[in-house]
Each structure stands twice: as structure tokens, then as C-alpha cells.
Image (cartoon, one colour):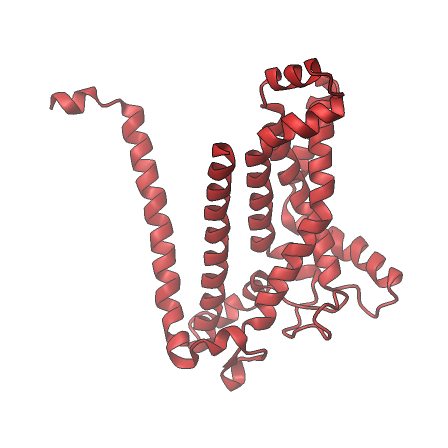
Length: 290
């Protein structure tokens, strides 16, 4: 009893919250595994390499959706990363403090805009820009979805990176300037390396959001269950795992193997996001040790 009396209430609350979070992840993973098992026991690993998806014929191939998810995520990161990290450095190191607060606040507001709003803007504006620029019949494509996702994840990467850069102790800047370095040299050689764990976490968080985005991507990617021809044709319509789930989850519920195939897509996405999260922790810890 004396031991229980010495335990702080906040410790108990934190422990309970941690256990609940862990149990939630375990329960979700167990559900995905159980509902995916009938599919894998039926068609095995062919699910990962087949290119066709025809529920009426009992054909389920996830390769187009896996490829679509990876290429859209990669391209969105390529589009957003230079702008996000460059903006973070500029806002943190070169803007006056009062102006910095206003600019960062505006960027954080962008992160709170619902994804369906981004999707509507993508249909009305971005689709037409891509269509007219590349003389396409329809602007819905991998490129359109990638640009839109890049815009969506930019505030996330920028704000978290800016926090990491701004939180670097002033002593590092002062020591660098005292050694005769210019402001830019001090930022690139001292501040950014110290902030790199936070920047890497921001990037991986952006990747996780890009992978998990549904509505906006579903509206602008074209939702065609096939690989582009050739595979690097980013002007072709495609499909991601999230857009596939968004379109077919309601009709697939309780329909046997079709439902199991959709849950299997969710399992793949779940494992990918968990893997990215763990990779973020490993990279951050290793960078801090170095």
C-alpha cells in the first residue's frame, strides 16, 4: 500500500494511456491479419505480383495499387521536400521573429484544411492545368495526384522542420559566427546538422501522411486498376491502395474474398506506415549518437 501511495497520479494516467495505445495497435493488426488470411490461403503471394483486379472473376492483384502508392508518395516528396526544407530554414533563421510567427501560423493553417477541400481544388484547377499543359484528354493522372499530395504534405514537413531548426541552441550559431563563418555557412554547417533528427522525422511523417491520404487522391488520380505503360508514364491514370479502399470498401463489406482482398490492402498499408515510423525512430537515434 505504501508503494501505491508513492505513485503519482500522472504516472498511472500515462501508463494507462500507453497500454491503451499499444492494445489498439495490436487489435487493429490482429483484425487485419485475421480478415486477410482467407485471401492469402486462397491465392497466396500471387496477390502481390498479379496485375489484374476483377472481383467478378475472383482475380485479385495488388501490384497496380502498390506501385501507385509508392510512385505517388515518392513524387509528392520530390515536389514538396525542397520547398518545405528551404522554407523552414528561411523562416527560422532569416525572418524577423514577429514575421516568423505570422508566416508559420499561416502554414499551420494550411495543414488543417480538410483533404476533401484539397481534392475539390485539385479537380477544378490542377486537373485542368495538367490537362492543358500536356494536351491530355483527362487531367486525372499520377502527376496530378503527386502535385496535390506534395502541396498537402508541405505544411507538415515545413512546420516540424522549422521547429527542429529553431530549437537548436543559440550557442551553436554564436560559436560558428565567432569562428568567422557567414550566416549561411553557420546555418548549413552547424544548425542544420543539429536539427537533422527532427527534419528526418518531419520527412517521414510527411511520407506517412502521403501514403494514408484517401479522398484527395481518389478524386484526381483516375482510379484505373492497371500499371502505367510504360511504367514511368506519370501522365497515366492509376490507383493507390487508399483510393481503392475508399471506392470499394462499402460494396466489398461482407462479400467474401473481395472483402478479404481489400483488408489485405489495408494490412500492406499498415505495415508500410509502421515500418516508416520505426525507421524514423532508428534514424533519429543513430543521428543523435553521431
